[in-house]
Each structure stands twice: as C-alpha cells, then as structure tokens.
Length: 289
Image (cartoon, rainbow, N blue to C red; front, side):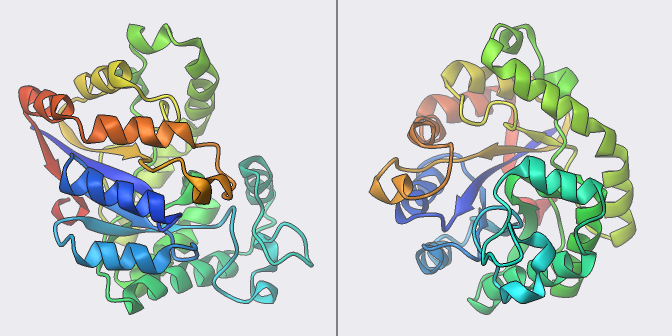
C-alpha cells in the first residue's frame, strides 16, 4: 500500500501563496499545508484554512528568515546579530551555530511553542509540524521542537529525510542542476536514524520519509512523474511550494518565485491526479498517519 501526503509549505507567506494553496487543495491534489505563524498574510491563511476542513494544517516552524514571535531579547542565539530583531538568514550559518552548540535549546523550545500556540489560538487544529528549510534535521534542534509539540499537543512531525535510492533514478541523474542538492541531502542522511529514535521516544508520529525536497524550485511534469513513479510502499510526504509570482512575492526574501506558478499548474493538473490514481497511491494528510 502506498499512501501520500502532498503538503504545501509557506502558507501565510503572501496572499498569492494563500490563494494558490487553496486552489491546489480545492481543485487539485494538495492534502496538507504548513502555516507560518510569523508571516505577513497569516490572517488570510487562517481564514482560508477554516473554509477547507479537509486540508490538514501544520505549523511551519520558523527559526531562520523572518522575525521571532517572542521578543528578540528572549531568543538572542537565534538572531542574526545581538542587536537584530530578525533571525539568521543563511541555513549554513544556522547549521554552524547548531553544530557548535551556540543555539540555546530553551530558546528554540520557547519560540517554537509560541508559534504553535499562535496558530492554535486562531482556531486551527494542528495536525503536525515541520520547519522552514528543514532545520529540524539537526538533533540539537529536533529535541526542543519535539518538546514544544508535546506541550502544544501536536501529534506528528515531518520526516525530512529523502529516500535517495528511490529518488535518484536515471531520470534525475540526467539533470546536472540537481546534483549539488543531491549531495547536500545525502550528507544530512547521517541524522536519519537519530531522527527516528527521537521522534519515537517523544511519542509523535511521522512518515517513512519525504519526496520533493531534491526537486524544489525545479519541478516540472517530467520530474513529478518520475518522483511519483518511484514511491515505494509505505506512508510518505511530497513537499511542494505553490504560489503566484506577484508583487507581494517580489518583496519577500525567497529563491522560489516563477517555480511556484509552475508547481501550481502541476498540482492542479488532471494528468497529475490521473497518474496518482493509475499508480494506486492514496492521498491522505497527517491526521491519517
């Protein structure tokens, strides 16, 4: 049996992203989305979610990019500089701080819990959480995030690790622009076993792994067909980023711009739905895990 969650990240980023996620769910194959509590279009995302009861909603925990929910002086190790009101931007700098033990776990816990609580206070039941740029791959970050989820009653978490044997097919290997990202993902696989142990110990649920990470920003019909066709038995997640490349998005610090509209076309395509049905893949959300 193959079960698949198709999760749209960045809910709340802009009004155009909100609209695209609603369309990809209502008229497409998206079954789940993760909401950014500290985003400019948060209220619009909440309103949209409340009109889509079958759309699972998670918390997209932000520890890089953007600004914290808590006052800056309470999360100083997460900030770009001591005097800055904003998070570190580069994932590489965040990773270096993490691996050197420079991040305070109590600050990670408090900020994540504040983000989860804000979404819940808006009347949204959280089915799971994940993290922006997959910062929870690092055990030093995962542990306080799991504690926050326990405190908030959030039952599941994204397994951010990619099943490389299934994904790195000849089709993908013919795409040189994906090779660098593949090597980065491969390097992070060292944390995969620890992830499963930590999640099990915390009593949360998760999937067998995540597809779509390697092709973020490059997804086209051919890659979608190749990735979907490589999914083995089990319960999996496919990460996507639909949106509209409008004026609001141009003001946001993101590398994903035109690709969001390309993904929206794929996610609302009748051919995509037919392909999933042909392969016998059941669409679910995290409430079904």
